[in-house]
Length: 261
Image (cartoon, rainbow, N blue to C red; front, side, top):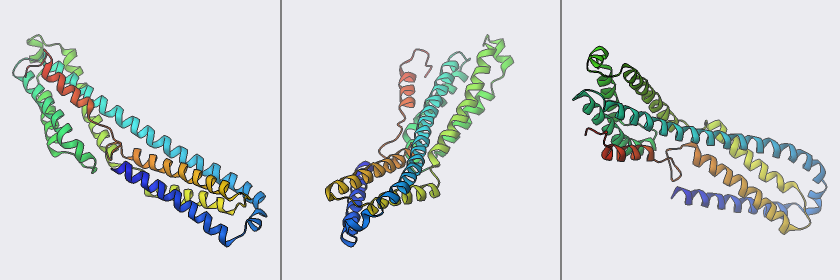
């Protein structure tokens, strides 16, 4: 739905840009505007390059943010899976309890927290489950684990994965909450308006060609701004990251022979 709304806004922006050109052409004759084409051309070259660089940097920034958010999601799911598999080698009932907590955490993230992230929020139940998982793993006694034949190296790796799980979760929630600063949006929108409106100052003998040029410029700028807005919040909107890695983990938890559930 938001994609359709965004595309409608793009179309309206293009029509407004063309309408503005028509108004300017009626108020100021083509011959009058042609007198300043040379000077306006030099100024517009600087203006166009400056805005293109700014817009390009914003596109790169939001794409890198999207890519980082996707990587965080995959890393967090991988850490969960690693803890789940290592728990299979633990003495019972501790191993089964850890696997139950890992499964519960994954289910809460998929079913409850993912919709909340679209609002910039997190799930208290997910935090509580993670705290219980951390408390359970840290409560394991390494000497006791060694006496039962449990590998100390595996225990240390599980601790590392536990800490990494907490780190990736916090980073994922931060990415879900933070977007581009408002000042950047003001600069991007005003810069786009100025860039399009500046083309009104040129005088072209062929009005149709001028209209097509302005419409194409307005379309490209509007689509670029729409792309920045769509990618700015990776877990919100129609174009968003889905909890596929966690869903894949849950499927494996149910089917794997290493599951004690």
